[in-house]
Image (cartoon, rainbow, N blue to C red; front, side, top):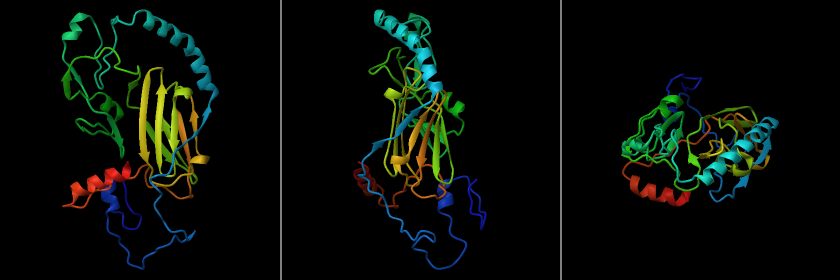
Length: 272
């Protein structure tokens, strides 16, 4: 629940919370009481920089143990690349079926043609938008599109998958925990500027996770870092100012009524 301590009008919706009319009358405050700094928007053209990586001993040991297995698997794949083995999982998003023989090719595949979306605590596929806050419920959602099973990867050999993550904060930092096991440091990166974060993670050999976040507050990317561990990744963001964040990402800005189409076009140009 979200509410102001002064009037306690509780709501679970963040946009409703932001639109609540104030309960106290007084003079406008154009400057911060503590620093005197005026709030100004950051430039959308600000360049990105890669956050420093710190690799834990636990991840190094896990990757070393997997190295031989991965090399053997690659050799088998190269020697017998045309064969579809029994038990091979379908590569279409949201499909959990496995190959059991030629009859599997005749089955109808129910899958999600869109991409996974994680926003304001809700999880859903962009194609059907059946929202849920429970990650396991999201993973078990039946596909909304019918087609043929895809037993082989189409291009890079990486499978784009949803990955659970959450966040918490201290007075000076925001910490994002991404629950990706055995991530590959050489193929993974987190880039950021003052207000935007781009996350690209390769983990468990063939899984890929990508996510971009428009941050609620301002960070110092040069003093932020990425802790890579065997069981998860922690993105530690240094706050530009020691203030509390109401949320991790910025809520979408709704266009004015009657001017939606024109506003959407302008917004796309600005974001690009």
